Image (cartoon, rainbow, N blue to C red; front, side, top):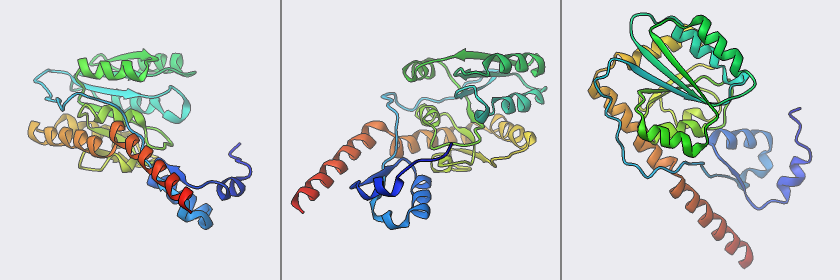
Length: 248
């Protein structure tokens, strides 16, 4: 019910409070400014040992992928609404994830999507399985239409394979999706036409420009959301702060 008891008591007795996003830090600073000095940033990350390899071949079908639970706040139906208006090109959409709305969403897709849109509901896949799928299959665009987010690990996974992203500007998403650099951002309450336009933004993009977006996606992940780098840094920070505390 959005109630977390004894926050001030807990914060007062913690040495450091680590957030996974700048958005999280801003929220805590506004709500608990007296503990501002305790709030630190420690980003999440994903592991991918593969080199950048998104070449976007000459295939006739533009391939879109999404990955999330199939629940209300993920708004998978809005992806279907946008795709349903595309008639002039061949698209293939793959969704990873399950949830209580899966059957409903499958029926909605069957009802609304035209013959030029192929779709695959993969159901539940572990992170490892999703990464293996990205490794052996090529995708041109990742889409996230969530109503709320922290920083989606699903976007980190996609970017680690050089897949540009279209996502809603909610939570800390704008800290990983940099508009017109490695993807495009949508307003939280976007119109279907706006999502449709951004799909075409990438679909009609020349190969040189697309390749730059793809490379930017990979390099941004490598610099800021690489788990091997981020988690080692987190451990070093914890160790150093422990040493400082013991000295004091």
